[in-house]
Every structure is written in C-alpha cells, then in structure tokens.
Amino acid sequence: MVDVTVIGCGVIGAATAAMLAKYDLSVMVLEAQNDVATGTTKANSAIIHAGYDPEPETQMARLNVEGNRLCKEWAKQLDVPCKEIGSLVLAFDEADLAMINELYRRGVANGVPELKLLSAEELLAMEPKLSHEVKGALLAPSAAVISPWDFCLALAETAVKNGAQLKRSAPVTAIEKIEGGYRLHTPQGVVESRMVVNAAGVFADKVHDMIAPHAFTTHPSRGEYYLMDKSQGALVDHVVFQCPNKDGKGVLVSPTVHGNLIVGPNAEPVAEGDDVAVTADGLAFVRRQAAKSVPEINYRDSIRNFAGVRAVTDQPDFVIAEAEGAPGFIDLGGIKSPGLSSAPAIALQAVELLGKAGLTLKEKENYVFERRETRFKELSSDEKAKLVEKSPAYGRVICRCETITEGEIIAALHSPIPPVSVDGVKRRCNAGMGRCQGGFCGPRVQEIIARELGVPQTEVLQDKAGSRILLCKTKGEDAQ
Image (cartoon, rainbow, N blue to C red; front, side, top):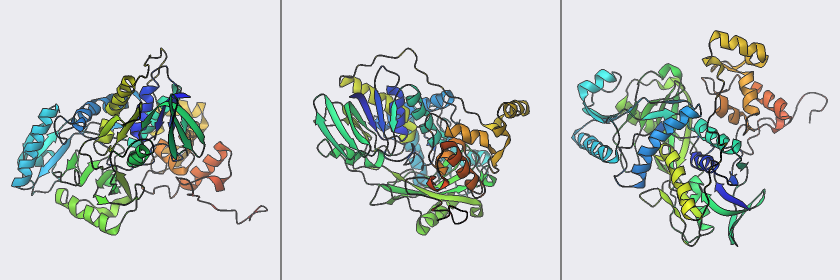
C-alpha cells in the first residue's frame, strides 16, 4: 500500500506530487492519458495572473497571489521559460472604467503589488498598437507568461526523480474503501493507497462521486484560440485583456514565452470534458473581439488553432477540501482560471490538508528541486562547438523553424518521463512548434522516436492513444 496516490498529472497533480516527494513517503501518480500535461494544462492562455480578478477573501484570491510569486520562483529553479511582462485590462466606456476601478480595489485587497490605473494617453504611449478607442486601463506588472506544459513536465519529473511512481494510460475506473485506505482500479491493475488526491481536472467531479456523496458538478467550458507566427509576436508587449464578464476573463492578446502571439479564448459550454474541437463560429468570435483591442493582427500569419476545456463548476470558488465521509481523500476540483497561476499554492495546501488528515510529513535529506535544460539555439558559439564535439547529434538540426537539434530530441526521449508520441517530443523540446507546425520535421522526429525507443514507425503516435500516423508499409519485402 502506498502512502498517497495523486489522480491526474496536469499541472495541479504534478505540483502536488512534486511537493509530496519532498517527504519520506511512497507516492503514486495515475494519469489517464499516455503523457502528462495533455488536458487543460496543455491548452490554455499560458498566463500567470496577477490576482486582481478573484473576489477578496476567497481561496482563488489568496492562492492566485501566492501562486503568482511561487510560479516565478519555481520556474527559475526548474529552468522553465517564464517572462514577467505585466498585464493590462482595457476600458472602452464608462462601465469598463468602473470595472477596472473595481478590479483595482480587489487587487489591493488581495495584495497584488504595484497596480496602477492608466489614462488613455499613458496606455497608448506604452502600447501604440492598441485601439485608439481605449479610455484607460489597469496595469498589473506582476503578471507573467509561462510554458504551461513545460512547467507541468518539470514538476512531474521532479516528483519522479525524488522517488514518486508515475503510471500513464491508467485512468481510475472505480474506487472502494478498504481497511486503512482506498483501492483504486485502473486498466493497469489495482493500486491500494492510504490517502488520495483527486486532481482529475474536468473529470474531478466524476472521480469524487466514485467514493463520496455528490458535492460539485463540472460544467466544461471550451475556449478556442489562434496561435500566431513570430512575425506577430511583437505587436504588443503586455498581456492585453478586456474587462471580464460572466464567462471569464474574455478574449486576450498576448505574447508567448516563445515569441509568438496568442489570441483567444471564447467560452462555449460543451457536454464532454474532452471536447476540444475548434469551430468556425468560435474562431470568428475570437477575431471580432480581439480586433476591439488590437486591430492590426494579421490572421494570415496564424500557424495553429486549438481549444482547451476549463473545469467550471457550480461552486463559485476552487473546491479544495477533504471529501465528506472519505478520510484522507482530498478534492482539488473546479480549478479553472487562475488555476495555472495558483498551482504551486494549491499543491502546498493539498499537502497541508493531508497532514491534517494524519499523513506524517517527515522531510527527506536529499530532496532535489532543480532542473537544467540544454536549448541549443540559446548557447554561445563556443558552447555549441564544444557540445557538438562531445555529442555530434547536437550538430544536426531537425526542426528548422525552431532550430531544434537531434541531440535535444534524443535527450527528451531518454528523460525521466520519456514521450511516446511526436507531440510529446514537441512539448518537451519544441520540435514542430514553429511556423510549419511539424510539416517538415515531423517524419524525421517519428524516425528518431522509433529508433531510440526500439519500436516500429507504425507504432509511433501523433499524440494520444489511437492517433497512429502510419498504418502499414506499402513498399518493400515486408509491405502489407
């Protein structure tokens, strides 16, 4: 029997596992998909929110502000791309001006640092590409952008390197109480655990209902995005929001840590938590709304559309609590925005709740919370030469758009949590993340995966289970 099982390895589950691995505990992580960070963590706005939006004295408010600080600290320790570029909330009329004043009030109450209300003149001097219809804005310098899947992966790797076990393709199908804990059923077998953390994202309500009386319901909300080429990346320097409404923080325009521009999302209720379709109507709405903030976006430079699903629930706040009648079963549900921003603080609170439920928290002496990645294009000429001399694979560029080398792909495939798909490689080292979106490098990446993992190319997936790229050989002696 393990001490703690974490269900779900998005950023919330990964952060919780990384914090639990700090202690002398046996920790198991069960992820339904074949890789970490494949749900909401993969498809979101990638914003570390400042913390002015949540109502004061809520868990969202406290955890957002604390998480904002911790995200930036942890990103530095784990070598995750993160840039503190600040955010702006635009006002276009008197109602919006009243709203940004309200957001300022909330932010001050929540402890957000250095908030400032800007006039239209101050705003346009700062961001000249914004619409000249603006009347003012709220500036929050502490907001940042991050690579969310890399953050999740770094935290999951931290957990694994410190002794946690990770089982992928292991959705929990049933939970039962047993003496001293819980028995969790998965297609890969049974796991018995003293305590459980439910970090199942949009499916957290269903996991909760396996063991406790119904307490909250997830109403999945889909958001659709444009990802623009780097030619559009310098259009604005800050995260640009419109005033929030009942559906969320509205359509934003923002630089990414990789130099692109992201535009979106809308908010569309969907029946299923895994419905990540993009629609003509949804994308048209995003374009119309974004034009109100930044009129000059050139959508001919769009390189990808994608959608993510938020875990909106019937509760106004995050659901972070021990489940009724289930001692040591901790729910982390309804983690919608600012969930990414709050992830480190949520993880620490989850560990605290487990301690109150009776888990002994004795710190290890050899816990490691650091990571350093080799990003070839960021090295100096001398560093590149030395690396290529030592490992010639770093001298072969596979992804021309992003200048990603074979050495980086091989390193990803032999990392603590190796990818099993082309998109898994993409999330780890950016191969295929550029303008052509893998059109040129995809087949070569597929060959490298097959070679390094010792599997036929027909078994290499694009992403999730079932996403086969090649079905059979059509030429050669063994063609089918």
